[in-house]
Image 1 (spheres, rainbow, N blue to C red):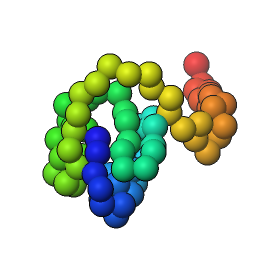
Image 2: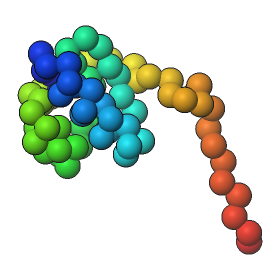
Image 3: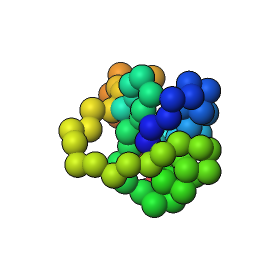
Length: 74
């Protein structure tokens, strides 16, 4: 998804991050795995959605790529 507006880009990253969506972020664009619901949300925020087949290298995240395991009683 692309925009020249830094505020719109930040808002989109914020909303996608709240959904724990892996993101690749650069100047003027962000990238996530295709999902039509997310595409609609990002478009409503004012970004242009572009479908591409390119390498996807998301940010490592707050936990440095470590997985969080949930333990539930049996």
